[in-house]
Image (cartoon, rainbow, N blue to C red; front, side):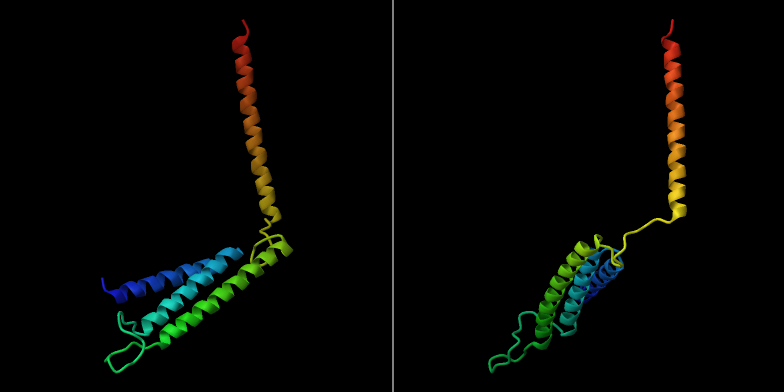
Length: 148
């Protein structure tokens, strides 16, 4: 497996995980998803800068080849910006959770509809009735067996 394929697959996995997490309804997975996307962009910038291993980024008289320092500077800047953005998003999410009482993205917790509530109550009643009938039958059978 070539290094280019490995880098491309890792970028694809990070982007897909990031997009999946951004679409979650809670705030913490969104923050983690944005972090995954920033990592993917950083690796993409390194890959597009034709990263050369063991070659200095500075041109001198003794060295014939050098690597371009611009992708490294861009990635370093992106790391600093993404760290600041992540810290801001975490503080914003914590503040919203304290204020709203939920960590849902819309600020609303999931509330079931009245039809779902009625279905749930009906199912609970059926389970309770069948359980109480079974217990009553078992208790009656046990009492009849114990009588001489």
